[in-house]
Amino acid sequence: MAPWSLPALRKAFNAAKHTDPRFAAWWEDNSKEAYNTGLANAAAAFDNYTKSKQGKRRGRKMGAPRFKSKRKAPLACRFTTGTIRVDADGRHVTLPRLGTIRTHEPTVKLLDRVRAGTARILSATVRHERGRWCVAFQAEVKRGLERVARPDTAVGSDLGVKTLAVMADSTGEIRTVPNPNHYDRARVQLRRASRAVSRRQGPDRRTGRKPSKRWEKANAQRNKVHHRVADLREDALHKLTTAVAAEYGTIVVEDLNVAGMLRNRRLARKIADAGFGEIRRQLTYKTRQRHATRLVAADRWYPSSKTCSGCGAVKAKLPLHIRIYACDACHLVIDRDDNAALNLAALTAACTTGTGVAGDQDTAPAVSKPRGADQKTRATRTRRRASAGRAGGATLPHQRQTETRDRTQAEPLTLW
Ligand SMILES: [Zn+2]
Image 1 (cartoon, protein in one colour):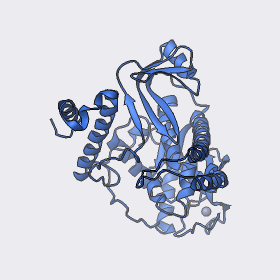
Image 2 (cartoon, rainbow, N blue to C red):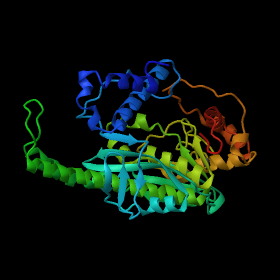
Image 3 (cartoon, helix red, strand yellow):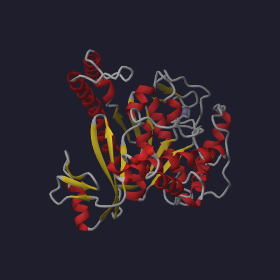
Image 4 (tube, rainbow, N blue to C red):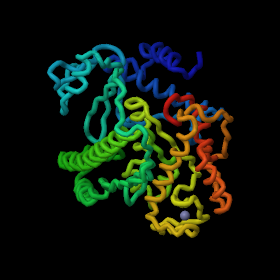
């Protein structure tokens, strides 16, 4: 047994809890799940660390786990055993140790599923977030696949900050989704609320000062603004991704480096507010689990903005401030984002003319590319040849790379 695995950590804790004076006095006051959650998280962190060190883990390099502070770490506990129940009145939940608790929101949706026998609750996670206690149920849900409205149509979606998404389908229809800018709209309110908080007597750990009642009230008010922004964002993103997933047979998105974009401090606020990463996450599971449709990620270096959607010519450079694409070869003039979305939609059109089944297309081994490598867009002439190939139904080099990457992750229906 590895020394940092969950069973090993649990064994060590169980051995120490009765005898070690650091635990003996108080461990019985809490649910065993509180300790188990911490140990499970620690085991996962150690696992990430070792895998990252051995090069078996994608993404940023992980350091060794550090001790958490109860003041900074988000408070959360996951219940996996015992009485975990949504009560019959649709207004209460019952959890081990905590007992029956009234919920703010009605729980009827999950309750109906449990009663109909289409959902089985596996665990419940209680967490403290922006001043509120939330409970999330993990459930095994049976649901049939729903047919999409236009199974033969592909849509390309170009995400942006000015307009949240420009969507062009393979029939040439273009739709724009305005950016709701939830956070920016709330910034005035937040500034006011934060100012009120700063003027009250807050907690001070160094002197041991407790926060005043008025500070707590003001802080709750500020939390409320944050909460509302997050709720509005979540609601809008779900509505958008649900509608898109229910309409098209194939959805093409860009493989955006969201983590990298968030490092740009001029753009970070806008990008985090828009929720690019969340859009892709939601589309991934909604296409796969609800509709069994395809989600294709264009290669990270596919020049969707620089390519002409009319003739396929590629510009070597197109600075971000130029919002209108004007083609030098065929004199097409089109909005920059519309052009990119059309290119993305066309990317699958070429893809579907192959075998029609996404997974069948390519068996070449994955080409590994150095992380963070800067790939410059190459000249127009070579690109023309590629676009000629596209008309004939051949796979573009960009597609091939995307699809081989999917293959290594062994996911049957969606494309990464
Ligand atoms: Zn052109």
